[in-house]
Length: 232
Image (cartoon, rainbow, N blue to C red):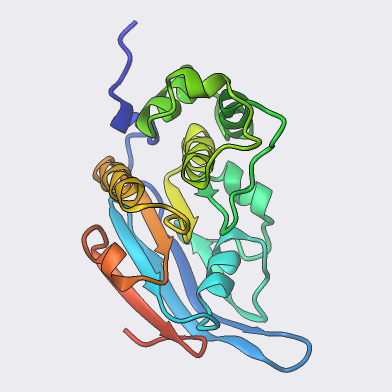
């Protein structure tokens, strides 16, 4: 059977445009009274990379976690294709097609690279033949490294494992929390090429990053956060 090209892997055709993930006036105040988000609006549009930049404490990761489902906002809503998903936990959002990576690579150290990626496919909303292989190829892990245990692999490789695991689930929206942290210049350039290919394939990609220069080349929209607000 014909195997689609690697960059086609993440978004199986559905005959309709993918839904847009949106934040509507999200506010999050912690029990001690600190307000980390102030009425933030954000839309992650299909087929483009959107970036969030700003200093530590600006609210980037808080907004990211509200979109991913690991934090519940104090007020406001998160919608996907117009449907309110604010109360849906992270695992339920993954099944809706929202993939994510973590600021610190969160892989299973005793599993091989391929086994880690297979976990993503098994958590998918629909099982797709060849999803693991396509994801491994896309991020450059289809060689011998696929059989190595994740324990002890360099940071750049672990970030690719995590990205492949997210892609194996066939997401339409991909949330990446500081994906270039710990990468060298060559690895960062390779990541930029992958993200550009994913956006070209129709995915909505959110990149939370400290370095505005890094995202300038790939992000169509760059939002700057400060004090829990989006300034631009």
